[in-house]
Length: 196
Length: 195
Image 1 (cartoon, rainbow over the protein chains, first blue to last red):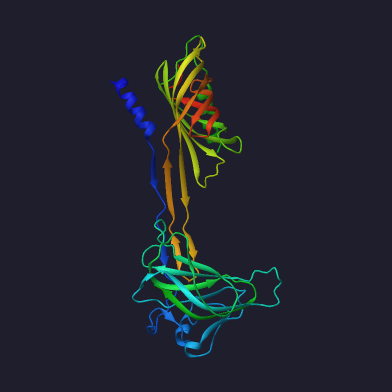
Image 2: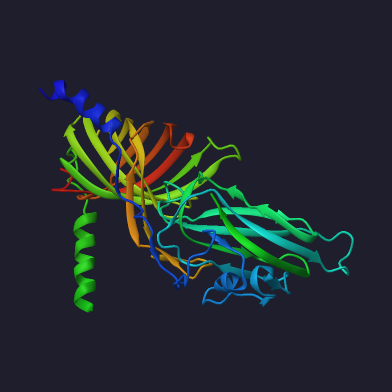
C-alpha cells in the first residue's frame, strides 16, 4: 500500500510550490484640492489671465511664477527656469473624457550668457490624475507626458508626448505641469489646453 | 544560577554518556538536531557563489536500511531582500556500518527547494502634486517546488547515548545554483537514545 502511494506522494512533493501573502495595492491619500471657479470657454483651455491664475494661485503650485498681461494676452512668466516649478490645474468636475495629451503655448529664451556647449532645451512634464489606473499593475500610477522644449522667441504650441505604458485617450480628474529645472533663462506660458 | 549550571551539566552528562560496550548500536526511530552548511554554486555567469546556512534537521529511521531526513536552513548572504531558506528531503541508505554500529556511511538521494520570507514596512511616496501613495506593510512567504536533485554521502557517528554527529557531502543538480556542492556538519539527539 505504502509502495503504491509513495510515487504519488513524491510527485505531489516535487510539484508543490506555494505563496502566502503578497504586496497589497497602494492607497492614494489626496493632496490639496484646487477648485475650478468657473468653466472655461472653450472647455479645457486656459488662456485668459483669470484662467491661468487658477494654475499658479493654489497650494500646490510653486516656483518663480508671475502672471503678466491681461485678457487673452496674459501669460505665466517663469523667471527662474533653472529651478523647479509646478503649475497645478483645477479639479475637473466632471472628469474630462478622451484626453490625449496637454498642449502648451510657450516662449523659451535661454540666458544669452550660457556657454555654447550648454543645453538649450527645457524639459517639461505633465501628469494626469486619471479616473482609471494608468498602469494595470499599479493603480496609483499617474499618466505622464513630456517634451524637451527648444528655444523660441515667438509663441509656439507644443503637444507633450506620452511616456510610459499608458494608452490615450484617458479620463482626467486634474493635470499638473512640472519641470525639475532647465538651464538659466525665461520660460513663458500663454495657454494650456487638454487635447482631446 | 548555580542550580541552572548543575542542571545543564547533568543534562550534558546524560547526553554524552556512551552506549553500552560490546553491544551493537541501533538508532532510534526519531532523531532531532541541527546542521550548519556551506554551499558552493557554480551556475552563475560571474563565477562561483558561496553561501552558508544553518537550521534544524529531523531524521526518521524507518528501517535499519532506510531513513528519511528532513532539513531546513536559513542561508545567506543572498541578493534577496528577505530571508532565504533551503529545505531538503532525502532518503538515507546505509552502505557501510562499523561492527559496533556506531559509525555509518550512507548514500543519500533527495530533493531540495528554496523558501523565501519578506516583511516589508509601510512605505509612503509623496508625489509632486502633494498627494501621497501609501503602500501598506505586508509579509509574504514563498516556497518553490523541490526541483533540485541532491545526491551524496553522509557519515554518522554515535558519540553518546543520545547524541550523534553527521558529516555530509552532496551535489545539487537543478534550479538551486545549477550545479552546486554542499558540505554540512550536524548534531542529532536521538529520542529514546541509541541502544
